[in-house]
Image 1: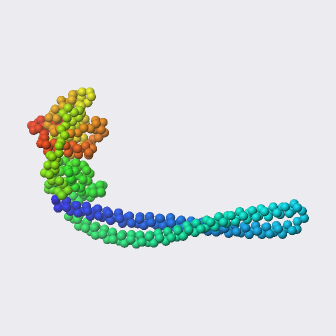
Image 2 (image 1 turned 120 degrees about the vertical axis):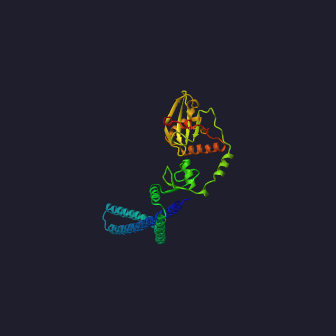
Length: 378
């Protein structure tokens, strides 16, 4: 591995740790704010409970005053009844006394109801006070921890920022600009290559790119995501061992008369390695689609010719490796201009299995091996 790549890996580690610490520092005040918000809710509940108690006490005093006033009226009416001259006057006073007594009973019932509720009100107040006391202690504890954690994080941030500046000095300025530009938009500027893929974007690499990264002789970037690439042998199965595993697998052979066929070509016009997809139509016509083998991008438009593909495209099929692969034509149309990764992986695995079985592309002359640019674009 190039020393600059190693420095870049250390720089990425520093950047990730700095980002983690910055996020943690930013999150701590939010946590305290959430606890304070909960504390405010508890305080509001306590105030509401206390207000309810005070309201009940005021209502009880009002009812008690009303009872005293009614009792005074009854006493007055009874004194007046001793001086009345007629039965009508006596009955009128008696009616007033009965009405006052009825009002007294109503007020006494209301006082009794308030007394029953008073016990529950007191319990609510005590519970709210206890909860407020506990939460107040908790928030003070959280605040102290947040202050301590923030101080520690800021100390580590200063240390990592100092390390980062030292690491930046050990990276080529052009490479550093490439790393930081991609880091800004994608969250990381360097990615490992594993199993022929960029682990940053999960896109298959061109064979030449993969080999260059694996050799570790020069800096390479992913064509898809622009991350700087590196190879770690510890995370990659040795080529010899991987080939032996593929060779031991029993590979299914494609049906020669199938209505759909997939092929691999190592050279196709100016596009290098490609996958070819042929489909027989219902109107005695066939079609051809071409995709880049490394990233699965579609090349050119769909080419349609009369007859079945085995007769319509002999110049393509005669110099290619037949692969396994069957998908509905409607599904292939939905792919648009790029093969899904699951399809691309399946074709790559079957190509490896075919090569492990000893299947190679037929040797041809330079003139007949590569289709013309016009044929490839059609």
